[in-house]
Length: 228
Image (cartoon, rainbow, N blue to C red; front, top):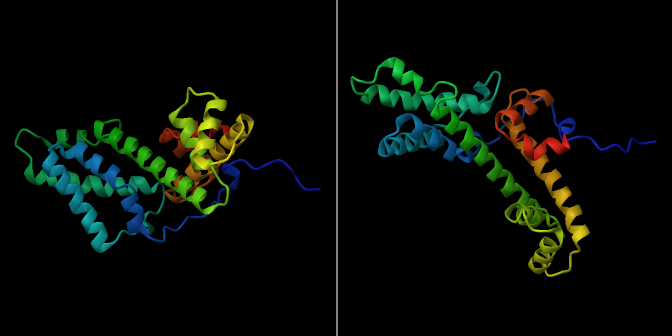
């Protein structure tokens, strides 16, 4: 007799290092996070844009090697690389009033720069997940996960009846309120799986515990807690 209990999202992940087949493309996914982090360190808008673009051009021209990450999180490795470039720029151009101690305080944990990095990484990751959900809908016959979840997210105060009516208009067939609610739960579960999959790629050893910690650190747990 088979076990009918569905596995949680975390129980379904692999515990081996997920190879990033195109590291340059992976870095470019989080280009906005890089730009915002540099802007929080360098602060001068013209200089920060130049430093961020130089870093991304170097990545594009010379590549990026995730195998250098021996442990921990890919975003920390990338953050260190970006921080080094930004701080080097400031050291070259800093005024006499900017001491080394003041310089390093800019990138301490819980600094504005650190919060900017985590916040934008969070946003970039969710944007990537939304894109993956949309692609899943496009490639799967009769799938409406992206449409359903978008409607619910953008109209959170609307009733199931109202959202079902809007979905019916979008897809050209009648959807009942109970069917909408069922599709919404399925869409949210698939969205949670996509979040976990994206986070998993950034961890050297993506155990369930490591993934869960990263979900907490990036404030992504509200999207997946119900399905863990």
